[in-house]
Amino acid sequence: MSTKVTINRLATGVPGLDEVLGGGLPEFSFNMIAGPPGCGKTTLAHQMMFALATPERPALFFTVLGEPPLKMLRYQQQFDFFDSEAINQSIRYINLADDTLAGNLDEVLRRIVSEVEAHSPSLVFVDSFRSVVLASQTQDNPNNNLPQFVQQLGMLMTTWQATTFLIGEYFTETDTNPIFTVADGLIWLRQSVERNSMVRKMEIMKMRGQPTLPGLHTFRIATSGIKVFAPAPLNPIEAPLEFPIKRLKMGVPQLDEMLGGGLPRGYSLLVAGPSGSGKSILAATFLAEGARNGETGVIAVFEQRPNHSQNATLAGLIQSGKVGLVDSRAPDLSIDEIVQLLLSEINRLKATRVVIDSLSGFELALAPTFREDFRESLSRMVTALTSAGVSVLMTSELEDRYTDLRFSPYGTAFLTDAIIVQRYIEVQSRLLRIMAVVKVRASAHSNELRLYRIDDDGLQIGEMLPDQEGLLGGRPTRRPALQDKV
Image 1 (tube, rainbow, N blue to C red):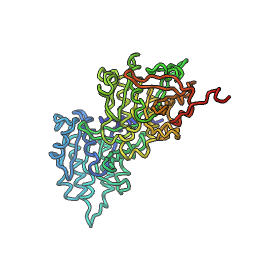
Image 2: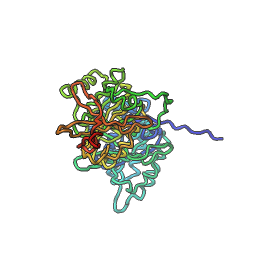
Image 3: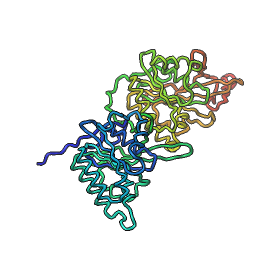
Image 4: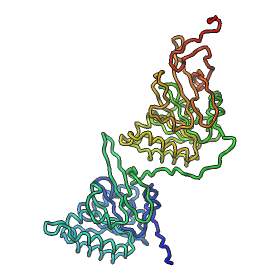
């Protein structure tokens, strides 16, 4: 019986890419990095090369037409991953421009072979392979020997036990090229522009011998390099259920009573109401109560950042490190990026409480291309956060139409485990606020409509209005007394 061959996987050094690849890059694989100009192909190749190359595992980077080594180095050294001490030590650049201009693929292959034999690299990069193809095309020789060239190059690199990357500008996946068949891995980068929004995405179209994460994955290019936002794992090991179920205090005792003793741990709670109804105040109170009990929290604010003039308590918790603030000001966010930012803060602080304030601002923070799927995106975010074992409070602003009893403008109320609704009512020419607990999954809860007010100490929940009816209509009427009917 033959022994199973174990393929070693290399860590790419690109945050998030190993997860998308399914555990890293197969050693000695023959790969293609493709996509249109400006999408980050050369940057991705350099980031992997600087992460992987060592004196024991040297790299050769062949440049062809367009960017000679000096020009390429000038731009790539702007990134944090660039290490000038590695140049001519563990990384060497070879210029193939003259060989490519001759248009003879055999000469290009011979030059590559001679350099590989001279330096014995473990990593080989050719940028741009597309230039090799175009330079060899003539009217008399329309790349008839290109398939043979690609086949020979792939076989030689595998024989030399070199992990190889060919970088090329291809605009669509349907571009005909034999490299797509020969390659063990095909990483396709793309970028889309909608209105004033630009989003970069990556797809692992092919990676032999291992399961990759399917679909398109957003990534950013920053001074630190490329960062890929892989979907958060949704199936962690479930903790055994606790009986009785542990409940979190909301910071408002009367609200805890209405919830049946507090919010069950690990639940997602939607607080829906019109502007000025106190949703953000309740969210801050929820985090402050956790801090009083030794629990840390995380808040993602998509509207106004907390400051001492507007919410001194929350600003103080953030300043003291008891609550982590997720910076949501980056343009053109994706759901996976937001979830990754949240999970990073949750893990850093070992947080148990999370606030999203608000879903309306969250939708606007997303790049336009993701807004059409906002409902699905919200479902993934809630699932990822609750799978991490935290309790989530989300606020949602609603127009108070009175006759329309809705809890979310996105049709996503079913995604949450609990719902609190806030509304305005008019009583004797005065604007009052009422609150009700609409839903607490698998738990008894109050069905009362309770008055509440907002003062310097936060939310203060009062009594019901037993002599009024039609509260949800916004203009309640006084219920006739028994003696009035006699």
